[in-house]
Image (cartoon, rainbow, N blue to C red; front, top):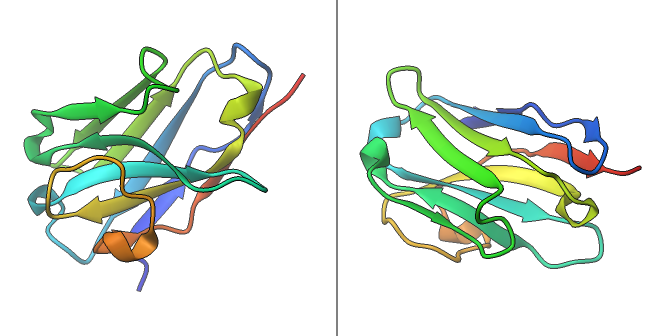
Length: 125
């Protein structure tokens, strides 16, 4: 059973924008903090952002702060990540992940209760 399914990845030019979505099922979405983690080829996984239950708290990696916005819709069991002013360095597979505790920085799948299959974002000119 797929608990988290990401979508919205695409190929864009530098300076472009995308909105990623993550649809959750099979667990009580509103009970979990949600995060985005990205993995680029040849590079380690990077934590991107976390949103708390009910969306009252949001945290961002320095590399994306001011350009990316995380949000959630608990009525629809969906998580979003709005990516603006995309840079080549943002090219990566983006994963959504669920974790009960509200915390930042975790990048391993085993640190989360649920982990998606990823959606690819490619930024190139």
